Length: 397
Image 1 (cartoon, rainbow, N blue to C red):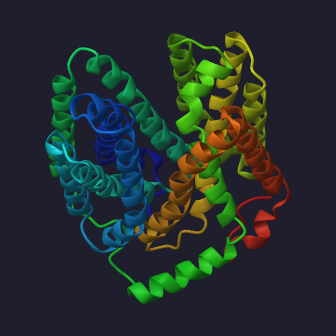
Image 2 (cartoon, rainbow, N blue to C red):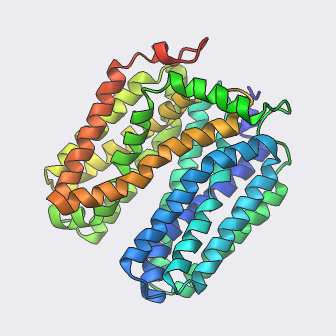
């Protein structure tokens, strides 16, 4: 087990972090910009086909996380990551030939298959002593990559769709080449357990955290249900221009990314996760409630800052809490299963948000999302974490 924080931030982790940034940069550009804009303007595909393609990406990415975790526990990290990124490269490359809907959806699904390994690898590399701090570091890379990808891609698409597409393919190739410098070691110690025994232990761990499972799904559902209606809400309900809307997203993202490492360090120092979760979800609920009231741009800017900071407080503490339920010697499989559970909300959220907006308007989506986050915060205020921690562990007070 790695206990040296400096070793964790060594050459190998820096390399993996660079690969993660490139992968998430391309993913953000593909999902937010390339699939909707390139698919509609260049390939002439209908919106429902584009929507199905984005869903297909998330479905394959989520479902395969558990299988990827199992492979990482049994085979070389480098080989698993290489194969995953090669599959992703194939998915991006095939988009240029995907003039038929089923081909476009299939290419997006193929792209989702290859996304799972690199993130699971990062989770298995995190040390116990500095988990919240290191998770903050990883989420900073993830957010900066995922957020900057669409911004750069949107600007480039105004000039040349062909150049933008070739750039993303080139970056995907670069990520594949960088994996050649990764070490061949496995994600865990050489003493591997049989798959049946691994699932038995994981079942026991999940039984301890059964009351947390609904919250895991609701958290990602409440956030992702806002995605399909954010642009129209900003335009129709808040009266924001495109530039103002972009400023809000950028400021919120910067505050979230800048706050992850400090919040992670503070969580490690205080030795508790409960109050970070309670405060984070409470502020998030209040911020969404205020946005739904229809405020001016400057008030919205302050709310965006508060939402970014609260998001930074939640992520490291939440992942540090989940880490207590990942059994030793099977980190890949454990994180794969937990990531799969969280991914269910990402698949449900956009559909639920679109349905609610069609039923009662965009504002209703904000109301319901705020209620969900408020209830989750109250739940963690009440929840006796220590009573449901794995034996011999205390996750909180």
